[in-house]
Image (cartoon, rainbow, N blue to C red; front, side, top):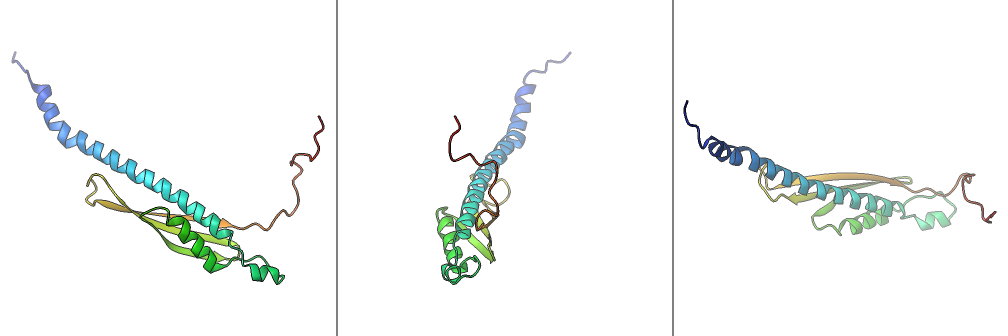
Length: 147
């Protein structure tokens, strides 16, 4: 029977740099990209909601329907997205009371695992303005307590 001392050491010397370190680098890159994407989606949703609040006041006062001011919606979306350093608004579409905001962000990855040192993330969110209640809900609390 041969003595086989040191096999585990050789195994780890080969497996560690070839398998474990790239897997760890990929996990870190994926976590960084996922966190950045979550932040981008949150900012995009906020920008869409703020853009949907930009009512065209002269049209409303003239007795017309509730429509959105396209220029004010774009400005509101740009202002909200400007809080994220590398994010930018790629498109703002206004159709009646519906606003769709599309954004993009370039994210630098800590490890160069995918062949590039950065990825570009994209997000899109839609919001609409609701002019009020068509009919009040019967589930609303009573104005006077019965207790």
